[in-house]
Length: 252
Image (cartoon, rainbow, N blue to C red):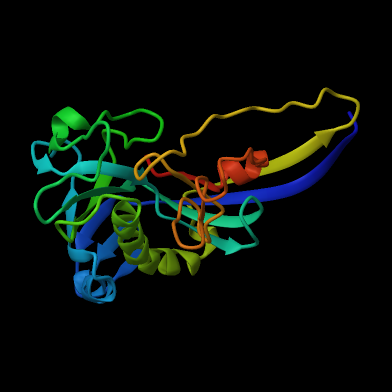
């Protein structure tokens, strides 16, 4: 069969067995060490961010009260090339859960919220959620109270979380690919003479918590991304590998 390869994407996964706090941020031998020293500069840099709390939630330890779940995301980073091609490193075994509310307890949600007991609010083992074996890095952002609720509020929480995990992305960038737990190659191909297939995905773009970002600097990232609302909700074309690489970030 005649075919033409347009893009090649390599995703290398590094599985984490342990997540802990320590004096120095590190990623080594299946262990991710979190250092909270990065939090104060992030809080000081944004007047909307009043506090950030980071917790480690081990599998099964879900009987706890949380603010609204704003997102579940992996820690992934580009090592070579742009989104949808080159090399991406990602962690498995640990996922970030972002929650948020303002200092008066107003939840970062619109038509519905997911605050309450985590055991009742988080559905495991589904697409976009952790498995029952994964460790959760819980980042909770407290925002300035008595503000008009618009996109600047949740975006401040997304930005703060993004800045925090960027420290660990930067460590992940330097990991030796030979130490990866898994490595997968994906190709965008044109099969000459075969039907051309377009998959249409409808996404939200209508308000503060009904937004999507495209083409951030990092996979599933925030910095550098463009809001589908700001682009006028016009149709966008993504290659399969761009989609696979995390070019689309749901903010709902």
